Image (cartoon, rainbow, N blue to C red; front, top):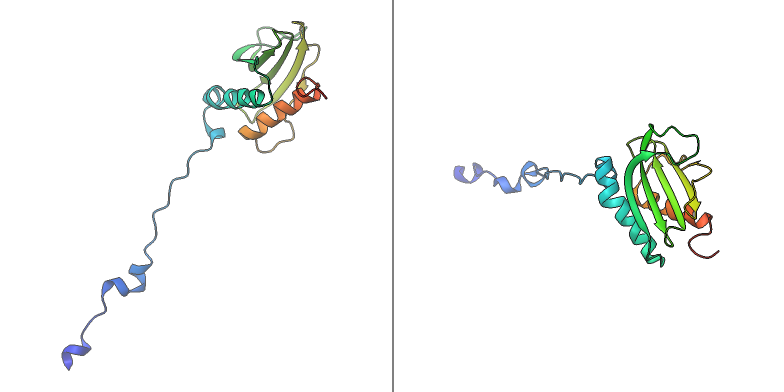
Length: 153
């Protein structure tokens, strides 16, 4: 009888062993946290091109380069990263400027026709606290639609 009272419970049935903490899975880094150039070249331009193609703009050409602002009176020595979009055989062009080498930094937009220099530059996405790939694509498409250049308003 003494043998029966000294039996211990198996380790598998103890509460501590049954509730061992699971190893936390490392979160995948967000696309937006990638280095600026990598994000723009590999993700933003690709997503933007896909958005234009899905809307029937087959001849859109997108270029990503660092150059001066194409505005009369701007200092050509002051350069910033830009997405330059051309279509309709160069008859329409937009520029999306990244004034800081960061997607959350200051951004601007301009549009021009017939190869002319843009006459104005506008702020772009200034009210967004959080900048995501989808929002950047959406705002770019909306801005061009505001020009009545995309969907034949």
